[in-house]
Length: 519
Image (tube, rainbow, N blue to C red; front, side, top):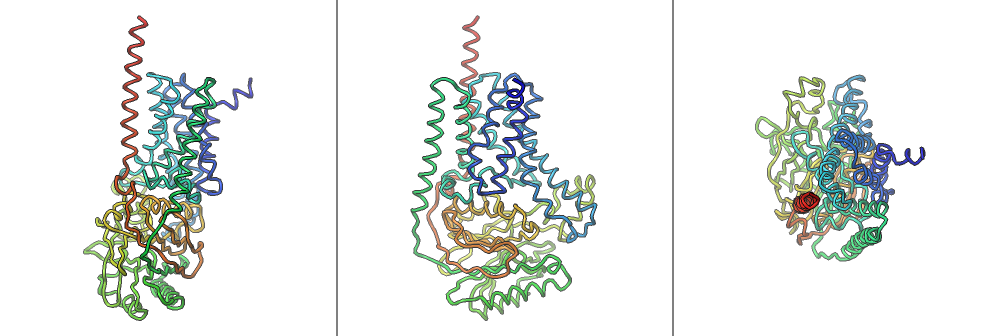
C-alpha cells in the first residue's frame, strides 16, 4: 500500500511527466516520448478532484518549473558573459536569472490548465471533458508567453518532433498548434484508457490509434506530394569567427575578410544568390551608400548578395537583411521582432531599478528600432521573404511574409551566443515548423551554425554543423501555393476555446437540472 501510495503521489507523477516531456526537446531521437509523457499530467488533472485550489497551483507550477528547467539549462552555455563586459559574479547572476528565473516565470503559466480544470470539476468530473479543457488551456500557455516586451515563446512541446517529418505535416493545416493538439489528445485518450474500466476504454484506445495513424498517413502522403519547376541555387556562407575576435577592435575587418574569402574560394557557376548571416560584420553602417565593399564583391562575382547588416536609420539603428546587386541596394528588410536584452531593454525604467546590471547586457549601446513590413524581395523570377534569428519562433511573421508573396523564406541568424548548446537544435526545429506551416523552402544562414536548407515539407536537405567554417550550396524551389494554415492562420485555438465554452455551459445546465430533480 505504501508503494502504491508513493507511485501515485501527484507531485511525483507531475515531476516524472515534466522530465519525460522535456527530454525530446534536447534529444530529438526521443521524440516518441512526447506521445506518452503527458499521461501522468492528465492523470493528476483528472483524478485529484478532492485537492484544494492551492494544490492545483502547486501541481501546475511544479510541472512548468521542472519542464522548463530541463529545457532552459542551455543558458549556462552563455557563461562567462565577458563579451558583455560582465565579471564572474555578474555572469553567474545573469545566467541564474535566465535559466531559473525564466523557468519560474513560465512555470507559473502551467498553473492555467490545473486551475481551470479545478474550477470545472465543480461542474462535472467527466474525464473526457476535463482532458479537453486541459488540452485547450495548455495551448493557451505559449499565447500568454508571447505577450508583452518580455515575449519569449521558445518552448513548444512539438519541437522534439522536427526530425519525424511525417508526424508534423499537420502543421500545414493548423500550424504548430495543430501538432501540439494532436500530441496532447493522444496522451489524454491513453490516460482515459488507463483510468476507465467500462467499454469506454476500448473507444479511448481506438480513438488514440485512429488519430495517431491518420496524422501519420496524412504526413506520408504530403511528403510524397511536391512539385515545382522554378529553382534557385543559393550559397550560404558560415564564417564561424570566434566571439573574442569578432568583437575586438579589428573585428569588422577580420569578419569581412573571412566572409569575402570564403565566398570567393567556394563560389561556383550557377549560384544565383549569396547569403551572409545576421550581423556577419559587427559594424553599423551610417547609410546604404557606405556598403561599397559588398557592392564590389557582388559586382566581381556578378551575383546578388543578401547579407545581415546593421544600418543606421535616423538616430536609431536597424538589424537588417539587405539585398545588394552589383552597385545597387535592391531591398532592405528590418527585423520586426527584436530580442529583449540583446537589441532593446524591455520595461527599462522598472527593470533597471530592480536589476541594474541588466542594462549592461545589451551588446549595442542604444536600443534598435524594429521594422514593420515583410519586404518581399524579387530575384531570378522568384520572391524572397525574410526573418532574422529570434523571429523564427513567431509563426505569424513567416505566415505574413508568405501571404505577402514570399516563395522562399530566408532566415539570417546569429546563434553564436548559444555556442554548442541544445538551444542550437531547438532554434533549427522552429525553422522546420515554419517551413511545414507555409509550404516553403527555408534557408538558414547562421554565423556559427546551424546553417541549413530546409525543403517545403520540413526535411533538412543539407546543413553546416556548429562552428564549421565553410559554405553550403544547394538548390531551393520557389513555391506559390498556400497551405490551409497560411490562408486561415491560428484559427484552431479560438475554435477550441469556443467549443470548450459551449461544453461548459451544457454541463453546467445539466448539473443545475440534476440538482433540481434531486430536490
